[in-house]
Structure formats: C-alpha cells, structure tokens
Length: 354
Image (cartoon, rainbow, N blue to C red; front, top):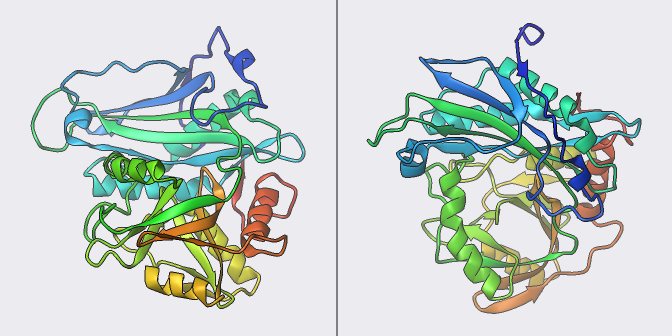
C-alpha cells in the first residue's frame, strides 16, 4: 500500500534555500520550501499534495480556533555520515499522533499517508537538512478541524499537514527550572498525554512567570497535591538518584515522549537500573541535599537532552553538581546523536531512510 499511494507533487519555482544560514538557525523561524497537505472530507482522506510552503485559507468560524480541535507532533530528520538523510522513529510519532487524534475526537491518519507523504516531503527538501553537529531538520506534522461553522461538536472536515524547518541545538547550556506548585498543566483523565494545542496554550502564563523570575522552564507537578513530578516544560524529565535512572511513570496527564522511550531503552541496554514511578519534589530536593541526586535533565525532541543546573523549590534555589564526561546525560545524549547521524550502529532499528 505504501508504494501505490498517489501524491500530487507541485515543486516550487522559487526556492528560499539561499535564506538558510547554517551557522544561525533560529528554531521555528525559517521553513523549508514545501509542505504536505491532505484534506479530510466526506468521511475519508483525500489525495495528499506536496505544495510550496505558504498560508492556508480558513474560515473565521473555523472550529479549531473556537473549540480547540488541533493536535501536532515533533520529530526530526538527520544528515547521515554517508550524506544521506534518515528519520528518527517516525512510526512512533505516527502512532502517537493517532492517539492524540482519538482523544480529541478526530479521524486517524492512515500509515501510508503519513509515512509516504513524510518521506516524499523530506526527500524533496533534502537540501534543507543541515550538516552541522547538533543540527537537524525539525518536522512538524499537525492536524486541525476545518468546519466553518459554530457549534460545540466534532468537526466533519480536517486538514492534515507537515511542515519542516532546519534547526540547531535548542539549549546550549544547562537550564534553570522551578517546581510549579500553583498552576496545573494537566489532570488525570484529561488530555495531558495528547499533543493537543490547548495543553501548550494553557502552559504559557506560568512559564512566562517563571521566566520573569529567572528560570528557563518549569517542573510541572500533579494536579491534586502539587508534589509529584510530571514533566519539565514541554519535555519529560529524568533524575539520576542513588545511581538509578528515575522518571515519572506514564499516565493520562504525562506525554509518552519518543526521546523518553529511547533514553530508557539505552539505559536498560547499558545495564543502568531504571525506575518508572511516582517521584515527589521533596524526594528530589532531599536527595540533592544528601548528595544522592547527581543529575536531572529534560528529554524531548527539540532539545534531546537538556541538563538541569538549578532547581527552584519553595522560594529557594538548589544547584546541581556540574556534569562531567562520564555523566549519564552526556553519555546518552552523545549516543543518541551518534545513532541518529549514522556514526554508530542502529541496534534498535530506530532510523528510517528517506
């Protein structure tokens, strides 16, 4: 089926590749020449199209604007050691996109539309994949409701698209975070495990307040007690405590991160003890004070690994030990980069050639 899907390709006549400065790539600002567009009408997905990147026309009564049926994914393509291009775990992103779609009462995307459309798009814009250490082509699949009518109900029509942009390293130095114990990112039974747009919109005010106080990100805590760790900003979070890699167990309020899965798989392969369980902010701070907590870091598609240098807790900052070359965060970050760029064997079968 993947080989028979017809994709209407309309190449641009005016490439913007000359605007790309590999030494100065600001995240999410310059997009590659083309985008994938697919419409859902009459109860089925229509023929996929790859067209020049540009604006979409929507009704002012667009139901996604008014009622929030909008989801997305974040993934990357990497320049390989031999000059080719490969995608990192794209089927996992497809499955998670569909889990988000089901939660938001939206139609799921067939595998052939997602995978063949993605590969053809990246192949067409392969020149946009940078070849600098730490860089990649960020890929943003997204879907939103397109009915032009008011009324609180699932839309009958949808747009699925994919856009891409070249990016460099997201965080260039360890970050300062603060435990959030007032605002809530998500609650059990909600949509926290889905990558729906509303989760991110609601997080902007508390994130802004934290940034104004001198922090880069928040560590979100649970909705009922505000004590148990959930995520860090838009990333999953992990700790090295008593020599074990510890991360909050998945729930309906925590995103099942692809990078999270990858880090845990590598840790287990290396024989590092792994615990997926409830983690309290008090346990983390007490472990740091006792010298038992040696590392804390965020994991996500944009940043991959974001080491945490300082944690704010109940009005006081707590500094973590400086990372060394033997620190788990550095070792796992380097291992992921080597696998993604073809400089190390892909024993887990994560990479998909374009």
